[in-house]
Picture 1 (cartoon, one colour):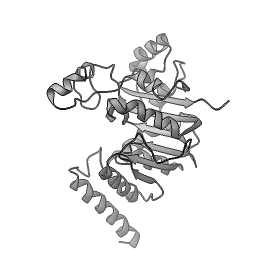
Picture 2 (cartoon, rainbow, N blue to C red):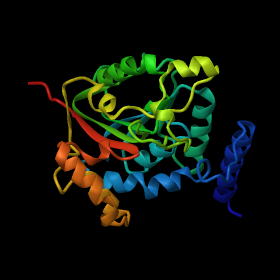
Picture 3 (cartoon, rainbow, N blue to C red):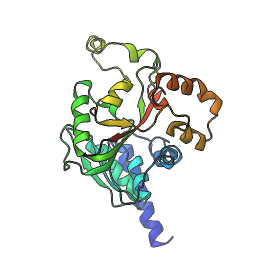
Picture 4 (spheres, one colour):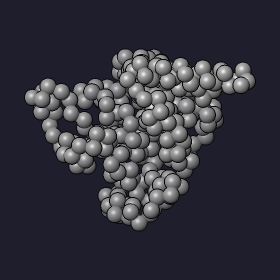
Length: 266
């Protein structure tokens, strides 16, 4: 075994050890295999969008295990990544290390309403399955803060967030919880999993955004699904409804996907 192999084996052991300490299974596809998942799924979305990732300043908001940030960095972007859990940030650093990536600026940010970045610092902000976990009372403030650190003309990529218009909550698989009012949580003594309303994602960052994924037949959602080998026939009802409503089809899918562009300064 070469010195490089020993070094890589040590990084893998460090990742596995911390994952187990956090009560996770290192070989779980959503833990040790999450980067591979993002390579197969998120990359399909990125490939059809008008992005020049090399040297692009990207913020991965709510990085979790760091999988999306690792993908962005591998594709040449300059990546900062935050999470409100110090444990997840530590695990994300080890995850990046086992892929040989050491140039992601990981940061533990306990209060996402106050990000440690300059106004307009980023050209792209990626929110991958994260905004549904923000406390409802804080969501608007978090969106405004993300708007602050995004440059004019910059992009917000929303993917994976459970869509509250659907009867089945996408992450937990529970039926009808999306439709229950928040006061029920107080009665039960615990928060129930819920998605986010698509109009809160579309409009919550401010009025100065356009959704680049439109009802046009050549939309980003359809093109990315085709690249992933999806059966187009299964998408036809959703595409038909999106065209009738004049919105991007990603606003209607069980997991919201939309691509917002901030207006440039006039």
